[in-house]
Image 1 (tube, one colour):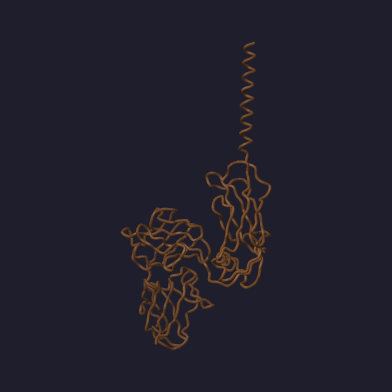
Image 2: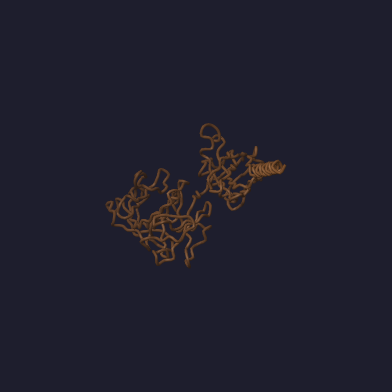
Length: 374
């Protein structure tokens, strides 16, 4: 009898454990919702202008999907032209904005929206057009890797009239380290930023930062205008890392061309001395140096006698490897390798000039001017 009783108790215990495990499995089972719900915008029609630049013009919100267990959610908004949202490469040209972790709301200013539509999606200014906005919800594993749960989507369409405006490129903004005070990051002050003219991982600009002169200086970090991430010292002077210590310009102080690649997590510094060359000086690569003014963040040379129809080129370090000419629209463009592109700058009329080169706005925003003296 005792043996039978023991066996019954043992079986009851096993059944209890099995039931408990089954309940725990039910509790830990991740359930993918059938659809995203509540995705909406506070407006469906927008007319943008300079007056709307500083305003919050559109807000998107949605309900967080439930997966039955605690998960790490991530959300993003994708903007694209309706014609590019179907077919083999559907949404392949979309501009993606990642939302803060677990955030279910995103607001855009007129400047942010207009820059995206005109510069990245190439929507014609002054004409009302449709913009598809897709919400993408994903579940990440605790390691940060993508989960096996398929992403979920919800789409809405806006009618927007953009306007022609100055291009706002993504930027890495200099933030002084230790006691060194630099302009506020949100100001995107000229002379303190690298920009991505291709809207990709590659950033470029020209910096003169006397406080960041090697190990004895205060140094700096770079703050992304897109997501406010901070980039600092990596494993060497030419590498970057998220959230690390100060960078230094080496050798410094110097006026430098600085490039950064956030995919490769690298940074490079090239000290530069600019010269003006053209038929006015027999195309000499050293006869007409330009001086950098830390107050204006510009390079200039005065008392240059130029003739109507003459040609000019800006070069650095006595070589055309770093050189600037103009494109067909008269915009200053890089003319060095590997493309060796651009056209020589044409002199409009006879006279004595001050020639100014402004590289302080970052890649894509370089300008020059020919100013007659007297």
